[in-house]
Image (cartoon, rainbow over all chains, first blue to last red; front, side, top):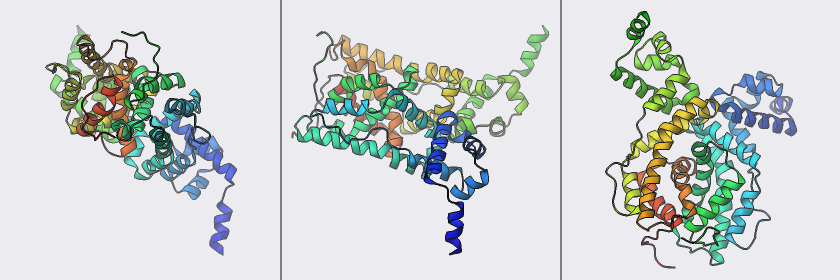
Length: 206
Length: 206
């Protein structure tokens, strides 16, 4: 059982592991993947580089694990308001502006690296994009079941593009981070009308 | 006039300058801003690093100039089909899939750097984002003038978010580059309905 003994000797506690992943995600947001060094991770977490390499093998593995460890900000659990507008607003309100800015920074920090590193792209998709897609699909299915949205509305396939796209484009276009206020207004102006859900508008009739 | 003489001595031809900027943009697409080195630019363009530093001062200035030099892929000139759908489709068709993938790669390559470098962000916004916004605004204004879109439709403010967002989200969500086919289908399913423009759909009635 020499192997087990070695594994145990080099193993760190789950709390310490979580702390390390948080530090890696913070560094990714601050400097991005390319500029993130194992030296910086070691310094930030007061660990030795030898430990980091022994435990994770290298930067790509460590970053992919940290992304996998990141919990999606908004979960569906407990959200069921009875209307699509209510559900989409409730989901948006579950991430505060600080979390949104953090996710936006993480997306920027990983954008380039994901395309060079299939493992990282897989981790990002599985742990950050797909939970969002599952959530939006569930909310839409309820709206279809209630008769709010037609099952053959072609915009159904693009709800995640609309939402993640607005999120990503906000910083580029307006030089401002995505906020709850922006996303709620975008949902009412774009997402619901595209899905054929007509909500009362406060703008004056033309 | 010693200064002018010095400036002239170090000046490169406009053709050579264009060639250098193209090489810088190619490198940005391939490796991203952080991993782009002046050594790599020198090697790729067969120039000396001394020349590059003398001419541009440093990497940030060189990259910002290269971005400024990049021509927007789609210009409004010559596009006026008489319908919003026709205009948006025509604009989309002016960039082929290769150009779209190049712009997508450039966006990824600059995403992180822009937030650390205000000059680069300014260059990116002024030379890549704003021409797109001006173009979409002109096309929308025509649609409003024709009575196709109501002037108070709240989606008008989000047309660029919808378009650039879908462009950026495509790779993240579907692991595929944005293509003409994808964007044309997204325009019909999302952009036009959000703007209250109802075009005939081929999907079966539910």
